[in-house]
Image (cartoon, rainbow, N blue to C red; front, side, top):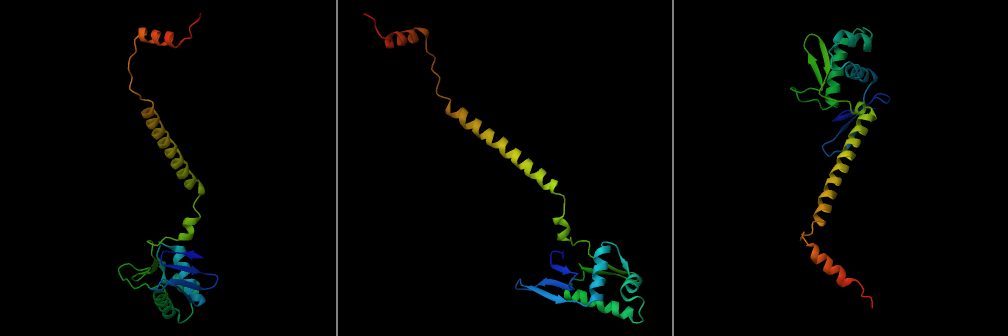
Length: 169
């Protein structure tokens, strides 16, 4: 499954899954040729896919392929709720072809990023936590041991030790 921010595509079952206004999934079955158009556009993103290339790959130069391609793009836009003309999911490149939006990231690709990146971040977090915990411990430990220091003369120390020593008879 290929997953984007606003929709998911299941090429194996020819389904496009979007979310309704009530945030419930809507599965739409799409005919295989329309799904093939979407697959080519996604695979070639962010490059422009020429109309002739789509017609050749999907319809094998079938006689009515030009109109069929127009209808396929229209159907895909409707299914994907691609209504913002300034920020299209499937952009028309006049006199050339179509381009799948490069602003959309395939979330399934993000899940396959190397794990070492995540582990490095966790290691850094653990290191910072240990350093901070150590600093807090040192701060409070030094605060507890700071009893007011009163200098004692040697005479007082000697008097105290002789007074506490047992007397011998």
